[in-house]
Amino acid sequence: MMSKIKWHRSDSIGSTNTYLRELGGGDPDYDYEVAVADFQTAGRGQKGNTWESEQGKNLLFSILAHPHNINVREQFYISEAIALAVSDSVIDAAGPEYAPYFSVKWSNDIYYKDYKMAGILIENTLQGDRIMDTVVGVGLDVNQEMFLSDAPNPVSLKNITGKDYDRDKLLADIIDRFIGYMELSEQQRHKVDKLYRERLYRREGYHKFRDANGCFEACIEGIQPNGCLMLQTIDGEHRVYEFKQVQFILPGK
Image (tube, rainbow, N blue to C red):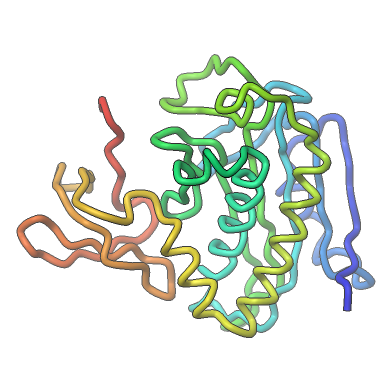
């Protein structure tokens, strides 16, 4: 059965995530609700970071979903679903010649080579060990050509290909793919895990990282069900990190 989607569109909004969270669970007649804006005055990223976006150039949207069959310990499936949906869509939009250069940087940033194209913020409403509602916010650089903030490595689809893109078409594709991955995660979660791991940024070889104790070289061993990153240092030490406990050191940094 086809999912019912309720759309909320705005020229300008404080935050699409905040807007959907304030709906208090949303409209029970719909499976998903999507808030999309041309501009956010209070857009947020992980840990309070901001997202630079030129008005009318990019995609700024949030999705309200009700993943009742995913418990708190499995919430990383939501992150995998949206990361795969966005990366699938931008790969198709850019074209096959660019596909090898797209990846998902743990936990869910979308990268082109060593440049960040999209950031994702997920906020869950819990009831016991169940996730009642989730709000998934996405900022995706589409048609913006110049970035003025001090963000270290932004890039847009237009920067990559030189083409302008229909944002509504791209958004519809992402939503369709997200719903598909959410449904797949409830039925065959191992497939979603496998696809996510195959698309990980720096999934092969040793690379530079930084944690509270300083810089080190390690390879990615995998991702735990709760989303923690497993690394093995060049000296053979096994380490596990939660979100924001470790940083990828980008080239030239």
